[in-house]
Amino acid sequence: MLQNIRSNIQGTTTKIVVWLIAISFAFFGIESILLGGGSSGVAEVNGEDISAMEVQQMVNTQKRQLISMLGEDIDPAMLDDQRLSAQAIQSIINRRLLMQSADDMNLTISELEVGRVVGAMEQFYLNGRFSPEVYKSTLAQAGFTPSSFKQGLKQDLLVNQLRSGLAGSEFATPAELALTAEIAAEQRDVRYLTIPLASVKTDIEVTEEQIQAYYESNQAEFYSPESVVLNYIELQADDFRAPVDEEELLSMFEQEKNSYQYQTENRVSHILLTQSDDESDQDYAERIATLQSALDSGQDFAELAEQYSDDIASASSGGDLGFSSGDAFPEEMESAIAALATNTVSSAVQTEAGTHFIVVTERREAESVTLEELRPELEQRLQDQAAAATLLSTVETLRDKVFNAQDLNGPAKDLELEVQTSEPLSRDQAAGLFSKPAVLSAIFSEDVLDLGHNSEVIELSPQHFIVLRVQKHNQPELQALPVVRDSIIAAITDQTARERVTEKAQQALASIRSGQSVEETAKASGYEWQVEIGAQRSGSMLPPALAQRVFRLAAPADGESVVDFTLNAQGDAEVFELSRVTAGSYSALAPQQQQGLQQQIALEYSNLLQQEFQQKLRNDADIVIY
Image 1 (tube, rainbow, N blue to C red):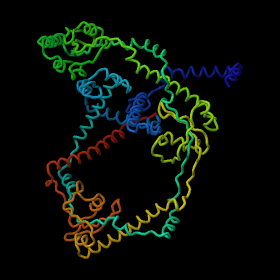
Image 2 (cartoon, rainbow, N blue to C red):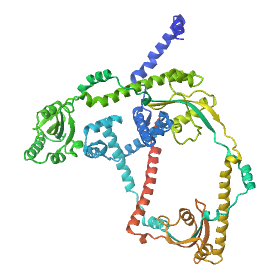
Image 3 (tube, rainbow, N blue to C red):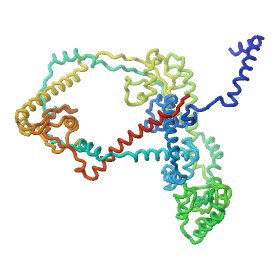
């Protein structure tokens, strides 16, 4: 095709067309390249662009959260960028609207508050102290710089301030509290007896006629599930591990030993004073002199750091900056550190950041590393590298071979791999290798199941791959009566028992309605009975099914009662008498209960207010999604 284009482009007509395209592009296209062609964002909120980078960062965050929650069993479709992008854009729009609203209200968060929050985050701590190294590396792994992280954190705090203000503006009136308490703190007097399902099962006999009739009437229940038997090849990095060549190990040691050479490392703490824009030179000098005086008098360095240091991140941990091997800090600081004895405070050191007072709290002298010390680590690295390389090479070759292969045997033989056979698997496979969403999706795809092709080589993890082929497809079939006989007997027995329990419950109802008490009815039939006086919607001792039924009933008229029954999940019948309903009273609640009710109502109102506020912002906003 390319050769045809190259040959045909020599014609006069073609050259004219190409020149016309070039001229058009020069007039209309080049401007869009040089000037950007309009907005580069993916959406716009009241004139503010939402960039593609911002959306992608949100998508990446969502992916990490999903993987963290669901692990390896996550459905790959849930990590689809297009699917997550739509959610991310909506989330960013809502956030941007809240930020704009906070700006309109002149809400603000100080740098001091941001620093305090960062300094309190335990994920940045090492050995109980804030570690700048951990802070930077953790942010880098998450795709943030310290600046972008602090900016995002500041926005989070600002949005939370707005939401807290909204929540704090909502409250329940005394009338609302009283009305809610009438229902929430309502008390009901209930007497009930229990007819166990097990008590009527012992003498149930199931006849052959019943079994045959049930089988013929419910055949849809007795079809075997659809299943498949697979041939598959599984590849894991561990399958390619091999002993390490000693010469290769020695060569790697020679290359790596310098980087493992322990350099002299100093653990450093500092107190940083920076001159603010509105601070005079004299005031700044006085601050430095005051601190110098306190240090000279022998006051505790860590306490002074917490009191005076303008480096908020390290101040909360006594000024600790972690270890440096001579390249972590500005040159002026490193020179002072190298000259300091441990636990000796330096004189003032000037850098672009400001004025530092430094102390070396620990010094680790350089040591040489031996081959035997590094052998386990180097062997592991060499094995990992070799296994990973062999695995990926084998996977790529396998992909090419299985694409057009009639089965998996040929590719397996060529690559000296083993074809394995699975047990029968169903669509709802719940455990094991074939329960993973990516694998199940491939097994029951049209290409593999219906057309009989090999699957693609599926990556379960960077160290784990599988390719499969359906060997046998078992369609649902009606199972013979002897196979399902036991399940039919169990179903008929349970159905009959539930009918008998219902009959006995109806008999108990008739006795109670005729004037017998619940206690008398229970004793006459040998049932257990109980009474619950003042049962409440939450925290009562009533069985769940009974409580749900009792609190749905209207209150009985004075001097009357409601008698009924319900079946619980186990099939037991609970026959009850609801004799009295007492409305709740807010004033009768204990102080702790009153506070809990206030918080409950406030939370409900707050959530509703937040939703309405967000919707109002969206309704009034000019939102464009490109």
